[in-house]
Image (cartoon, rainbow, N blue to C red; front, top):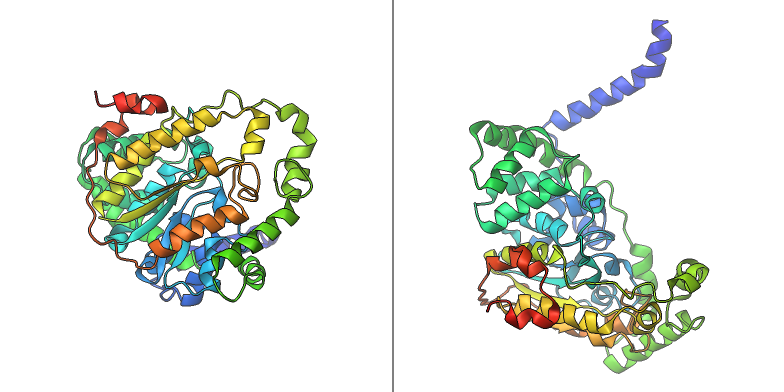
Length: 423
């Protein structure tokens, strides 16, 4: 009987013991190699997003974070990562984001970089679709939730309105995943109280070292590179980076990919996602609203981080496919109001580098599908991103951060009323 049980459970026990020994051992992988950083820069892997070691190494090397969500995965030949590789940009994009990542996830991820981004640059692609009335879904935040990055926040974040707001949001969105000492420590942060001695000792000496060890051991092992997509895109691009020629390439690619439908949507996406439900989708988005959302305050956390670390940031507001929006009833006036509101939040605090493409959604071959940038859309992004990324240092920046943007009253202000916000 014992022999049979051992045959069943013995391998599991041995594997568990080996894993435990590895986690407790002083063994570390070496500093991430150039090859590892190159692969991670386009992988958009969750372990990279939730980790620290690879991002820290990348930001100390020749990479600049490009922060966004699902649009980053649309890697056609005009995508900045492909262009940077083809034309040997001095600094290359490090993509941070995936479908489901929004402002709060990005804040938690960024703040854990510590000083590795101080005085440097970043690009942020702001998706209007983040700013739905309920904000980020708890299951999506939970999927990308990082105890490692949260431990950094607990140890380093000083009391402020932003810290209290961030802690409360993390608590609200991780009720089933954060427990024990970590949860109690978050409650202290949310209330503006210092951590207790027990909390500090546990997080600093037990929890965080163990999580760092896991990150150093495993983050380099599970990165799914996108070398095939890059290589395919590199073959299509001309040898010289000439704007007119590149626009012709983008137009040719877009025309070929979208010839099957009246919306200018890539064939595969249209046939699989749109065509089976097209009749039902007519007018479906007429009540969509991106003007009132807790996301505006979550977004403010990123701005607070950028200001604290004296970073220069370029913000890109992509459009929605105008032909598709017309079919589904999505209001262009509402999208314009969203752009007005988010631009006001940025400019009023000194973030003036904004590439607003809200009104470009009717341009041919600008969008790959209903909401994601495509061939000529990426080319326009490239024209702004490349010169911005030519240097890593932020230079002199000046910001005037307002905690008013953390308040519910700002979350609910309509875009056409922003001028009245401070009155």
